[in-house]
Length: 563
Image 1 (cartoon, rainbow, N blue to C red):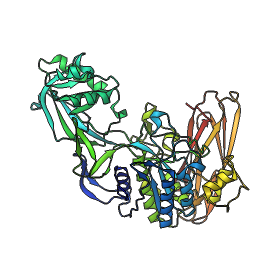
Image 2 (cartoon, one colour):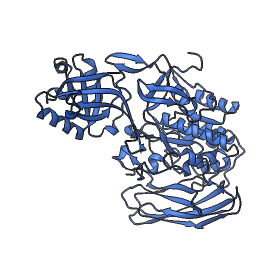
Image 3 (cartoon, rainbow, N blue to C red):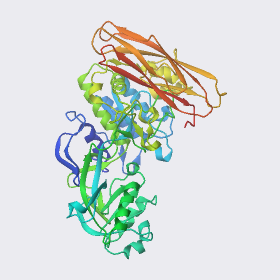
Image 4 (cartoon, rainbow, N blue to C red):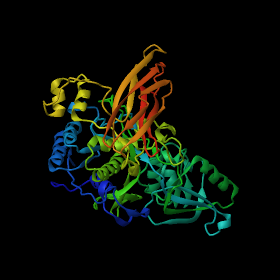
């Protein structure tokens, strides 16, 4: 429709996540029920429609962002990006440069291309680039083995589900056999007796769910995955529950030991606080940025998986069998870096309100240097897409945002428009290409540098084809501004990436008053291992009283093809 009204739901979801007001009784068909509100619920929203049902045009995106800048917004949240284009052809990069000049922070999504091998987009030095994480909430159903009326004889397994009906599949026969339990034949499934069927893990869960949804004779299904936490689904149209391979062994033992195996499945359950969180979502696109690798991207991570937020009233949000359902509450659960971005945007709005004197770079810096690299077990955040190994800053940036700490970060890294141009000048762009981005001739290339952009992170690249053992060194300069208490002192704490030596000088920074600046230098020296490995560490400036820990991630990586 020829208006700003949302016809697809995406913009409604993202804007309500950033700044939606309080809504009591919000849920997705009874899941994730409670009070919903956006991150900056007292902020005002101006929505600019730049994508239409007919498609997306770069000129519309550029025009929409330019209009937002002209209207005087404080924060721009944009949950979209353009893959595979240089900065001077990227409308988000061009428009956000103009926003940055007005000290408007642009918060953007990193992209959902990891499972398809697509690197992140919006790796733009002057924006905030947000990765997606999982959090400690499970949408669940309980599978009861044995008579549900006899608590002493039953065993309960809590699995994942999003079946939308307020249903209880109660005391039905539970069957498992090698022929039926592949759950891949509509003909065989349609001939099965009424029962709850156990479906083996064949690697084709989506097909199995569609097959079960297509037949009417089955009471329900138990689906299996080696690791349910890695399975991404946004609705379940059949009365099913997803359990782990370990839990499957318990189910099979029960079936084999019982003369009359029966089970029950109860839906619409929400479990919180049971899982270690956050973790990096497997779909979130990874760095380095293909269009500006000299700046470590993404910047931070925020909740992105199965986020509950508002939805348009005339689009289905669930299905039962072959029938679709509208959400009676007006909410939907969806996943993506598009959902993570507005969380960060809302935090940025809160910081703008608390510190109107801060620049766009100071706001970004505060969110980055106070982000946490630890999960709820106080261990390094795990990367679901890398078999739950410790996450790299190439996946999560500085870590998961911690809004309360960002309000008072101690030190910030500030950046001017000319600083960004000096970076562009080091990228072999022509003058016309640079002017396409800046849309101005007021900047110069007198001090071009790819290492000295005053960014709160460090990335050092090496050529993996260089002789193994060859020592390589990058030197960086940074300037920090004291935005904390007046007179204070910071000491540096370094965690060097594996196989790397990191030297920082001076090792202490003394500030006499607020808003005073101090600079420091970092030498990152490493030996090419010939393997193309990526390693990471950090630099932390620790305030003498222990109040502030200003952390910057370090990544050492090959120029391409890192492991």
